[in-house]
Length: 297
Image (tube, rainbow, N blue to C red; front, side, top):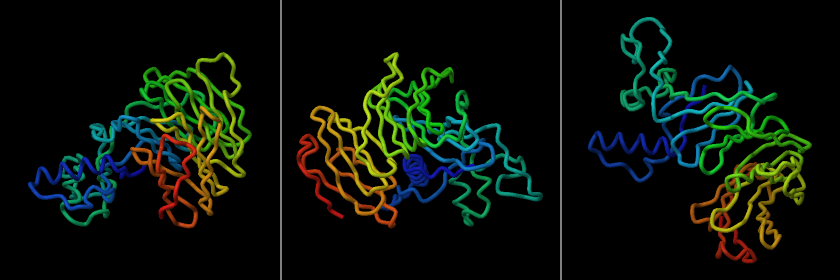
């Protein structure tokens, strides 16, 4: 089980709490500091990945039990009852869970975390997962689940939980998956490559393979405003590929990069590195791929 402290869920919970209390929210109150729910249901073992769907309404988890689970983090599971520890508890004599606001509003936060509301489980996906799941994602319309089990990418119907297609060819475990449009998928692997896959093609050969990385590729994401693909690698580089001109911009983070994120306007990239530093680059013109990014922090 994992505690849900993602930004959007916490921000909603905190704002609603202050609205209900009639109090003013502090400047940093929307930061993810307080658990609002727990995701319970995976078999004992590590949960490797948590991702929200593009609309932010649901979240996906991939775990060592070789399943992917879909959750509604803003609704509580009515079937869940906290364990009976004997005597009175914060959950009340009925054994029902308490809300996060009630739980943390009474002091002693974190002392009895198992009484937090349990997020509502919706679907479980296990078909085709022969190994632990380390990467999950969806297409932009959230109709197709993308999951990586070892070196294989699976595309699964989100409603029926049936496999639609399977892609393989990496020489090592896939670390990250994403969708580049509705039917083009991207995978980043420990084999130092990024591959694009076309779900419309009968061929299972990759649409394209990027081999510039000198070490494991840890993350890959498309830009929304321009046909570009951004990747990060343990070799310390954040690379931007322009699909129109086949140009590559490589930013040197010096230290191994574990992941990165882009701002909404795609003018800034923040990279998380193994030396406990987040490095930020600013792009003066996101539409001009030849414009060099400037490391600002």
